[in-house]
Image 1: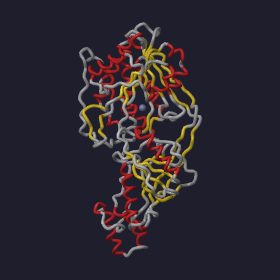
Image 2: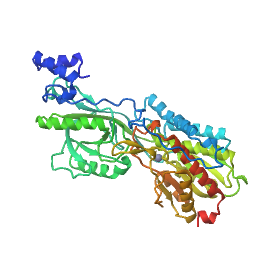
Image 3: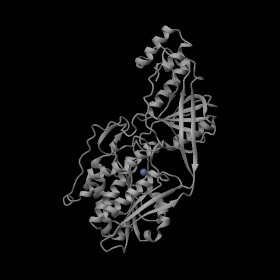
Image 4: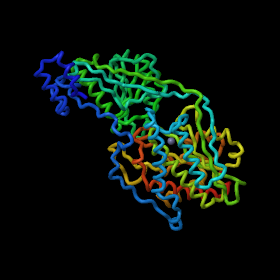
Length: 521
Ligand SMILES: [Zn+2]
């Protein structure tokens, strides 16, 4: 793009032809040589490569070889729980996200309130029917609030002849507005200023009227940097910034769908775009051109109302039928981008277990729930499920949630891939000794990669079930690809899926036959 004839035409105005030819040669064939500043486009910097194929893994998973799942004696016939079967479900679920991108959604995924999540719910209902579950229901519920939504936007670094001949505007393709951002006018154009890392104090520089850039390194995913990023962005806005750019330093050029309420227009950009932007700021400073380095931001966003979400339920009756107590097993169906690890893996395990238990009836009844609205404000699935099903849930003794349970172990310090899965936190909200002992036994039996210290807090999708006052269980991790477009199919561990499915099947089977007094002492 730096080598088009239009560039030559523009450049001729300001340059003598021999210089121009040298400059173009430099720009087109030797970015890496980074000759004299301003003698080639964009100070001689290598231009960002764009977004590429966002369904391909950013992490190099080619050498990943997770250890095989343990199959205890007597479980050889549990064919529904095999890794390949589970991985095929993950692929089908991820396809609903890919379809949403193919349909033209810039924020793609399986998003409750939109067709993509509805399709995933219907697929889950069909899986329940195929498995032979009873009382299968898709329950619609209405939004009880607004949901911020971005239809379209652009973040463009504006070229100036002073940056070198052939410099053209650069669209930062990884950009994504953060929640609650709005731009009322056609666009904002302002000078860019680097304010450093979110862990560092804001430097004593004039931020007023500028677009402030801050960097973050979310080693365990955006989740871990949520508060620090938002609070510092709010400070930058209070100092007069007209917008804030969060450079999410990970790898590749991923979109990150996270952060909100920065009190002004804010955008996340990926690693490669961020590197280019910050290098350009530095070069402009060195050349005394810092005022000339400007971004143009445009954004078409609105608060949507009147949306609806869906939960899907299906029941495997216990050996004595539908009378008596039951266990709820939940997995959220929705997710940002391909969302293979958040939460196609959990939903795949849910579907596989529904099929398994339909063939191997448990002592107590199991209610399987594919829940909506984990990521859509005003549309929380579990809280609507609790509200809409008081009779059904009145006889529930425990809720178990399947969420983020089979992603490859990715070390974000060097982006290497380990031999197992992401280590998960395990929650037993009532810390019942029976449940604790059972978990340790099941961990040893299947090699499920849980942190040995269990928690009583329950983040993730269990929040909506809290009002039931029941014991709740879940394994969950927040890995480096959390809410990033790099959360793709290839990052899922096939043996990890099987480990999770076998662990939970055994765990649920044991709970289904245990005394209630042990489960909820
Ligand atoms: Zn999740």
